[in-house]
Image (cartoon, rainbow, N blue to C red):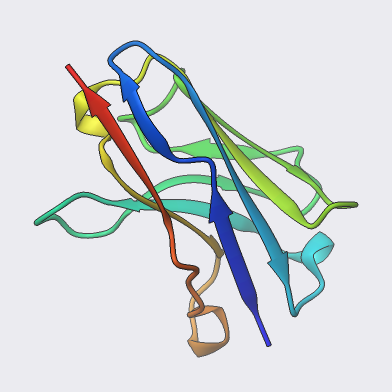
Length: 118
């Protein structure tokens, strides 16, 4: 059974940093493209960052480029999201997910809340 457990969120002032973690289980983590999404109140869920299975290639939404860094540790089955220079618009629930289309990819964790105060 696929499980994704996010952690590391919290309340931070504008300009601050947070590091999110997501521990995965129930699938072969090292072979899967992983991603981070976020959903702000009243808004649709947004893809934030993607990392290939090897970790060599990453992609980011324009809104977080040059501020966020996605990384992974395949020995620990963990994907990270380092968030720097946070702004209030980054306030959202953050989720990790296997990146792909189809019901076999449609598993979500409970998310971790990030609140950025101005």
